[in-house]
Image (tube, rainbow, N blue to C red; front, side):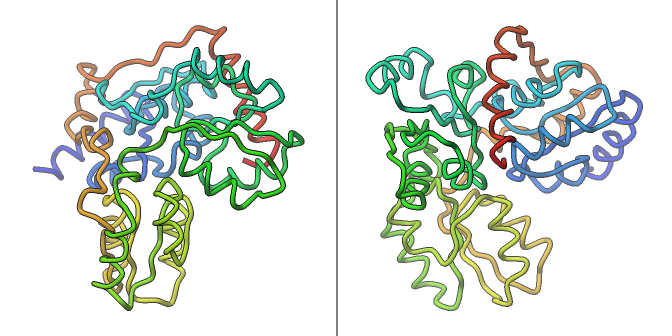
Length: 304
């Protein structure tokens, strides 16, 4: 049955001139039919260079918005309209404007996991893999980092020469795992290396053998000579790595490390979108797009 649906999707995406983008947290069956699989920024770059006129994003809303910012001439569709991102949506523009008024000499650094509206007042955008490099390279000494306090703390520790103002926001999925659970996982798998995403709490990151982006975690595990790994990010990555490297063992840090917003998109959603009876087209007024894309352009300038 799954293969039948996948074959329909592969046929329809050619007929409709559609490029399918799948975030790394998507299920294996969706990744198998995607043209590109990766993190949100990498997918946006791929969309920009893709020859297709239609883009189907299998991920969450802010990712589809980012694709639209960089490829305004293309029709961008979010595979499941209910797929949001609690972290991206937890801070409004008015709140950040209020904080900025209290810290006027602080540059706003926005994690890419933010809405288009929030990006309109950001000075520069960052990804989890580029945040340290960009914060170190930008000329401003004072940084207001939004919205993830955990990623912000990680960057702050790596860039001590700058002053950081952090707000109490972040990814509820990564933040729900504490030190006690991390210690238990390491005790249960004493021979395994511990790889975590910096969206995890600082006390969890402190126990890691490696901390980095989703792509960084996968690359580290694939290139390492070690045979066992505890994966401290969404459990879909555990599954993907198990498929790719059955000769190695991968363990989830926690059974609760699951992003339900990512998981809501199904293979059938993709099929319905290609049939023209599902999904949601991302519409963005040009004024918002032009203001929001500036922070992404500056990210590219500083090495994003």
